[in-house]
Length: 255
Length: 379
Image 1 (cartoon, chains in turn purple, green):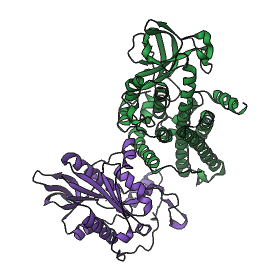
Image 2 (cartoon, chains in turn orange, purple; image 1 turned 90 degrees about the vertical axis):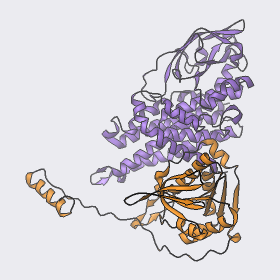
Image 3 (cartoon, chains in turn purple, red; image 1 turned 180 degrees about the vertical axis):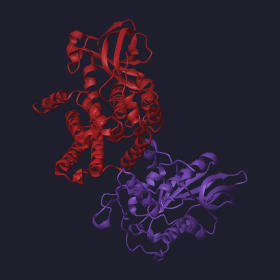
Image 4 (tube, one colour; image 1 turned 180 degrees about the horizontal axis):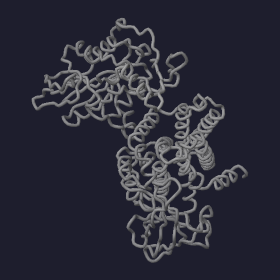
């Protein structure tokens, strides 16, 4: 029986972010979602449970509003959830998230396999997975695009690395961080969503946890990127075309 | 007063949005062009329990409420009004008729497979000479031993060519007037019942519409839905439910028209500026957004009343009337905003404008809605 834990972050859906005046980001009409690759993490947990049996626990440390995200995660094949909800958990930095998740898992959730998304849709720092593995003292396999569990109970993972695919193997327990290629997350059906509300959610208060350390990194500001757009026009004449080719060469776009 | 959807409703709505973006939007142009019923989409809708949202689980549904069903219809219609409508008439009228009036056996035999999405329901009332004037229908059902024998011709039957389970209305006692119409559940393949070929329509083209012909069609007594003579009352109650669905379909159309108009008006440059900077355009969009909100509140309120088990007949008619007329008004404006590009095949607003028109006609014309509303307020 495999105990699988899938961690997720409830993030701003970037499709709703608007650019305000002077490049500032306007978050006034945003909606939230489970971070994209974390959906892959939950899906992979549910897939492996389908193959090997066991249980799937989803876990998040977030603002209290993420209760909707907990239901969303539970509608994707998980059996139970652990939810550390606190207003101060809204803007956690990676090291803080990893230490909170590590504390909860170590003290409350039996685990063989922990799955995280490779990075979050908002910050994409790719820190929580490896830091959590470090915190728990277990191996971490990152950039995973395929995951299998052998009969001997060892895990085999395909890692997509720069120049190819690396296949690694490790004994459980292990933490993996997954890429979107690993699976196609389901679209939960109506009953899945309705049943999610009936599944157990263990609420963890901030007071039940050791004090969270200071952030190692601080975000000082965030603005939209400014793209420089240049437009040069060339006439459809032999001179114009020669000028066009020269301009492309000058920018190194053709040689 | 609480204007907030539940977390479940918000999630279900979002899931339908994703479903429609993934499976429906990419084929919407093709199924419109070819008048094709997308069976593959309906198989997926069935798998996700979208074909019986407000039907209790013991009868094959998802066991949710009517408002949640309405949210799903709205989101589905935003991508394809035909697909949204097919689900709406299947759930809102066919399934609801059996749920509200059927015996336990009828619910197990007919409602369960419909609510699971294994069978598609159809509503067979309109005749060539009997549209808004239901009483002018001529199809008869004569009791002969243990069966009723149906004869007559119906028309504009949605899901006619593709349906599995037909709710058919016929006179068991024409002389009894309003108490002489009865409803029968007739499964596809019953001898004497045949569907004509799919009509070629201006819009809503992938929704399959045809004549239905009944020629000495023998229907066992057990297939009588409700009491003999209760047909008209059941049909009107069915319309109440269906109309909220058409209102939701209309909202989906307006939302799509608004989305397209915002996107295009910000991109389209004329006289050196995006046309959204022109007051003539921005005011069209303001009106569109405002009436969309108004239509949405009317529609959700009607569905909410239904879920509270309160009378919602008048509110359903108001929601349907306002939302469908808003859909027509604003899809015309959306095409106007798009100019020549909006008049060409392939522009979403062109399809939206054609699809919008039927919402003012079926499940009671705008005129019929005004009859219902005025009848209620002038009482």
